[in-house]
Length: 523
Image (tube, rainbow, N blue to C red):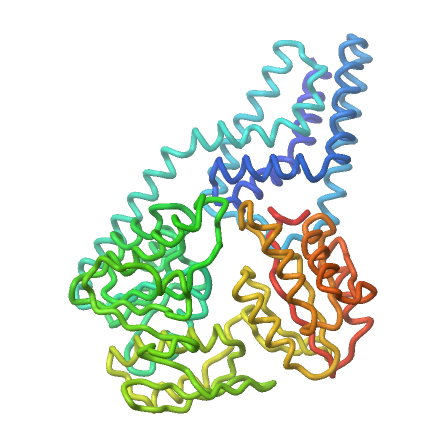
């Protein structure tokens, strides 16, 4: 009896770290079965050596458990389980997560259910006298328990979600005079939202969704916790990685002003095709009320060629599209920002900003279009553009330990990464790029990263890649472009990459940090 209790406790100890990691990856994959399963399959294909070693350990312990019966067998399995628990704990202490597990109320509910399921599995193991499965239960089973746990908790989560959504809808209904602005696009949503808030808040008491709160529950939380009767404008970022996401959010928020920043191959893995992405993003314009206004980026060919079926008023903006309603010309870039002239209805207004990059100028144009529609004066817009803060992790200039960094770490994409390279190209001194490449681009991911590597020639002097397997296409692109491969370095972790940066650079050099790989993709 005592040995059974000790075996149960040792198995439970071995399950702690795998359970934490499984919950962490389930959270990073947005609590979706499909994404979580894809991540597991991807991990199995990428980390074959460590998985083979783990499988051998489980099989050997299983065979031993079958052959050695009684007290001796139980003691050995207890020792093996405890050794596994200690090893996993020590490994976990060494890990530094980019995005650690967030212990939300939802995760706490998931932990409670997982603990119960784990206890039942351990009890079943003992009742069936299947001691030989001890190490399997401790190391492998937690990854599988995510599925029954999610099935059990999903009705409760749906009920909680619906209650909060209904509360948020009622708050919006009671706030009948609120001007609501929706912003979507494959890239540039968060930057546009921040820029728009800086301009519109000069004239209106406005609220924007914080950080990347662009899902139904993130927006719901913003409305329930932050929206007050004093607010006159609500600027709402709307994200989408599945067909139907924007439609759902439009039917929830009902904005009268809609902005589509750009459309590209972001989230191809979940959308399935570029056509699906185009149709879904453009629901922002299709579902606007007849007396509303759509603001769209006509530098983007996919937006420009889309046939809008809604008769709503549409305002265009761009840099390269000559007939845009709001166009930027005479653009000048410098170390401390950018300046350009906005041409609109015969007026020419000079704008200065600390923001870098062509896409940020496009984002500013969209914010100007919305602000002018709401009657914000040009002088107010000029002041806001000049004083607005750089958007965190989006071509943000910063000095760290005496080194000059361009922090473009948030969610790199094909368009943004190309523009970031152009910003780096114009910098003085030695130019370095640190990147793990781009992710979540479906079957096109390798080719897009290969092209990214090709574009680095002439823009960067030194390339530092993070993750050998992940960045292989970039490496190949660099080789194809004729880049000096003696100036290409590959490291396993961001920590190692930055250590090399500090060792080989000084304050006259510029380091571009392009993309910040979440742990679910960090191989």
